[in-house]
Amino acid sequence: MGRLPRNRPANTRVILQRLDEIERQLKLPPKQPSVVPQINSSVSPLDKTLTGHSGQVYSLAYSPDGRYLASGSKDRTIKIWEVATGKGLRTLTGHSGVVLSVAYSPDGRYLASGSQDKTIKIWETATGKVRTLTGHYMTFWSVAYSPDGRYLASGSSDKTIKIWETATGTELRTLTGHSMTVWSVAYSPDGRYLASASSDKTIKIWEVATGKQLRTLTGHSDGVLSVAYSPDGRYLASGSGDNSSDKTIKIWEVATGKEFRTPTGHSEVVRSVVYSPDGRYLASGSQDNTIKIWRVGQ
Image (cartoon, rainbow, N blue to C red):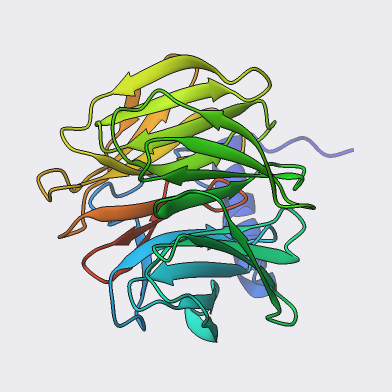
């Protein structure tokens, strides 16, 4: 049996060189770097901008599967967009006033809209067939489905929030506490809580079962026009700018009530905010006639 070569390092280098040649010939994938590359923080989180409305965009809602986005506008129409491409798919008409709020039912079969014409309309998404509810004596600024789809909450210029039974259209409860118009309402993912945004510059959190007011969030310098829970219920996003002095979006930690993040970029009032179903994106609709989609999660 022959001896091992004394000059092992030289032989090792030859072997390694030969292995590198074999890897190149086989076109093996490159080795992963040991250091994770840094993300360029200067890159804008904006993903795409959708255009098509002839008036201000007041409200947005993702379909439950995240494939579509509905928008309500001052032009009295509702538009349905394909999220992946940004293409406009359908326009719903029927309201005689500004469409101030839109909300998909949890199963995606219905779309509710609240309008300046003092009505709520419930549309069948497959057919466009519509049903109309009435109740508030002033403008409906916001509508939101409960997670189980059995109830609908609405916010109005009359400073109140109403809870409706969707099957019958019956009004079940009225929540009072805001001192000015209630612009937006949103259920928590578990359906136990309801958030409301008002011209009084506050966001209020309510316990749905009792109607009890649990917490008031302050921080916006102007009226709060829209509010939305993240899918996991940990965060609450809000849009502001009632008198154009505050054109920001704020993201709050629900558990603490603390302000977490403030994305900026719109040139006019932020009328609406909504999370995508996976929580990775936040869409915002503005008086600058644009919709912006922000990356907020991993």
